[in-house]
Length: 144
Image 1 (tube, one colour):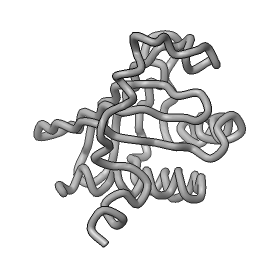
Image 2 (cartoon, helix red, strand yellow; image 1 turned 180 degrees about the vertical axis):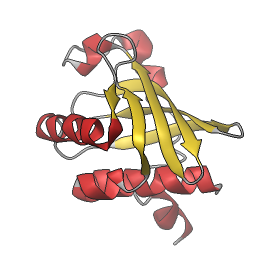
Image 3 (cartoon, one colour; image 1 turned 135 degrees about the vertical axis):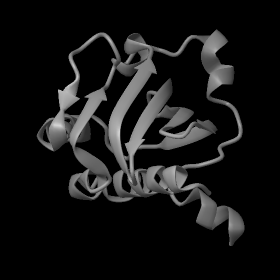
Image 4 (spheres, one colour; image 1 turned 90 degrees about the vertical axis):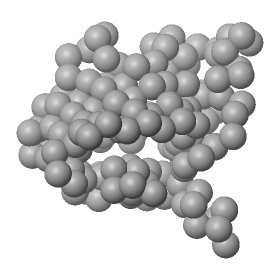
């Protein structure tokens, strides 16, 4: 597991197990720019903006189920394809930009209709019915 992947795993564990906003923020730079929903809403900036987003998101999403299907890396970024949610499942693509060991940029791309509670079309089901390669404590369970 790369360092970037280890940071993502720590974020997943903090969020999915405890919804611990402070633990998630520990992995972000003070000047993070977070584009949740990409172009449909303005980005949240700084840890205060990230905290604001996560606080609202925490109220909407109980018992998160964050599953990663594919990962790719460059020198400064981690590209993540996965699905989040239950009972509403939202396939997404995310790009995490790093400065050192911390996330300085986060962009999520997904179908807004699904995220707002719409049904996932049947033709999109194969996007979420794939082997999971990372998720909450996934690596510990798979190697135990």
